[in-house]
Length: 572
Image: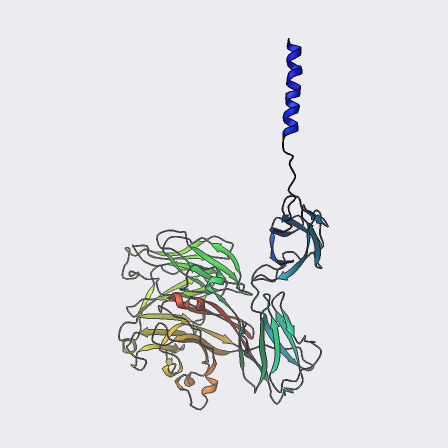
């Protein structure tokens, strides 16, 4: 019986198979590349392709953003990763190592046989390299010294770039025969191409066109400005905004500079979560971040020996504390601790809010530390071989006849730790108008105790910060100055103050040109008066001036940052 059942089922199965409607496979015509990426062989970073019709472009950065350091530049060893419709065939295949130094053609064939040819092209790019021209320098025939522009990059389209070139009896200038060289950001190009050994006639401004890493073309004009003999020559080397520095705040309260680094503090009061930022003097790039030594850390300073100092401000009984870092890689060492409730007459509330200054070396030899308060007093600590003579400061009341007994903000600095060193004072008292007789004053006290005042007509209403320095026996002061209002224009000004009798000169007076030796363009900052700083480093006849510009409104945030100027001292 079981055998007969099988014989019946088999025909039924065949009957159903024979009655089923046949299926026909649907071959797709889709040959579109929906996504494709490129990467350097053996690496993980993908560079997406930009698909435009039958062309696919890859932007492959060959430099790190903001530097000239190569990431990769071997386009002959690349790998391709693509997303394609099911059933497509690519010729040549995408597997293996590809040489992308030249455009590559691929043919994508759909399942139904239709095909499309794509051209793959790699564009070397510098990511955000959009400045283009970084520097343009000229030299005289037979000389190796190059002269750079008055103003640092970036340069806008249509801008005339001026270069001061000496034209003196001993060193005459042939403006029709100068040799030029330039520096571009990576991946940028210039027209015409310059030959460093071919002279250029600069009798008229010389036109160049620069194409940046994004393809934008800017036209610049190079103009030579013949100058007679001048003892000093200035130019701006670079400007790094607060954003480019990686700062979280735009109100830079203080700046410290050593031979290799500059330092900006971003501290918190009630915790130690803030940081002391360390940057390279060469290019303004971040080197490292250092934890603050304690809570209520506030300002940063440096001495001539390269020691870095961080102070506290006296809030909630914290006292005035100084910590010393021998280098950016060393830990903090407390060298002064004066607690406010022990002797409040020496450590008043809020001491340390104003900037402190250092003369000498706080580790070896003699050194002085100064700070100020709104009560018209300034506070001095003397150190011998890193040890304070007393934790009590010497409290000095500045001349009441000059200040009215108080000042809104003030700064005191000493030229060096020598017994006969000059001392510099700057103070500010708020007024109502630019001409009300108030504002800032700057004075120098010599070894004999005689004071000399810089004519207030020489600077704006406010002096935000200053630093004095000496080169080849000549004395100078660099001043960051601003008008009365918080959004008034501000500038860096440099005065030679060797001859103290010249401090009284006003613009237009005979000999004034030998007093004010430099005035920058507008810095465009806003300030709360307690922010911004100037620090100077002297290396032989070369002087680097660092200006920390601050901003207290979001509209001006792009103006906050650090500028580096260079002063060359010329000996004819």
